Image (cartoon, rainbow, N blue to C red; front, side, top):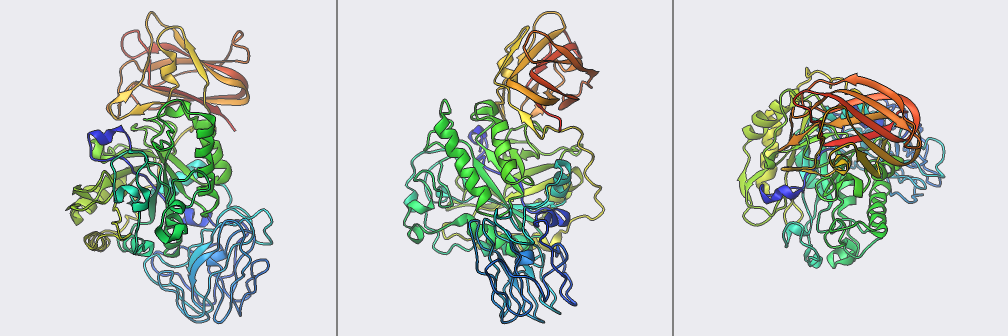
Length: 614
């Protein structure tokens, strides 16, 4: 939630979670295949795990005993939910990472919407594994019910996993982006201490007031399924710093409050409920933490370690997370102070298939995998958009506490507002619609929201004729965050600070005759430099054509004295994100030389980035 909440009643939002059938299959651990159930078929919207749902003859997790025909995969996740067949019991050796969660039918039974059928039990994960989840049928059974059938989303395999385990096979960034835009529709769940008290960004709130006595993430998921949504996004920590999971760091999480005697875990209940219904669970996390003071000034090593420890918990203990939405980063600390390279490397090391985005307030893919448009700030994905993107909007026009629930929340969008003014407009532009539906103080969606979402499902289904996402071109999948920059003129630091907000962008602007150049110091020599990204002048969430560099050269050096030409070229003066690829080459210093601009003699850049070519 960016500074924009000052103008627009809110800012936290997110993007994603439950990619299309191809993506769902990619989230199954490699080697976690199982035979299709005899006669079993997927119901509408079902996504089969590798090889289909578990049938008779599957193996149990290491140390576990499966009943007749039942099976759970070992090595870190359950296959197709890893459930036992009729009368069987699932493997019981669960290690760190949590148990497999799923509803499965016993022999001949049917699993409806991923619910547990008589005699079926969820298999647990082997050592180190994350939860495997799905609804699947046993021999002769048929999964039924809106998307709640056979989806397996096992997490990273345990280090000591047995046969059949292992981490999901990594997919290319563009493959993940294509899968993401095929989700079309997601439900954003803003829930936290602001549901009960406090104001946006307020520190040290009385977190003991958090008390959702009727918490039912299954109700959230059922409402999402009824709307034909394919994923969710839960706020795990907002700007106030209150964590909805029992974090091992700090003392400002659900483990430190009376609710459920400190044993509650909203994140776990959410991911389990959504996976059990065939939905993928995305997570939102704010870098800014006003209570810990992270982002209120200079970021200390201890504060950075705190952030990384919490991200590690979220990406280790809750199974595969298809997208992680950051906030309080680009517009608060910038991507240099909290280095984008460092956070991205951590996330991708833990979950290679996890997409990342941030509330950058840019319509171009600078330092994000998914471009996001935050509608309350006055932006909407243009019909000409060709990036993988998401549009975020609040379901309520009045009331609420920022993006959170509050008494008096009202003026909900109509079915037509959602379907005709959003889903049908955004779908052709490869932009998912992420609708914020905040749970109330009981931990439930208000009845009016539930009814509205069901009406959306009755009026809308994804368009199967929508063209695939266009080729995305070169992307900075392996960024190197510069430690400093110098320039022949202008304020070089503005091009690498990574600070952007709705109505605020820092710019590098040259003076004097061309050519002019800026040199980025990567802090140490890197062996595989091969990417440079250039973001032209931005204003009010839009790129402009002011001072666009149209002719350029990229030079590299290991000592800042002798520079070698890496590449030259031209760019169109259209105000959009530009890239140049070369090498890879060994370099510590990367220089962008502006040789020509579209207007006047001044070159302008909002951001300049560098990365590896691998």
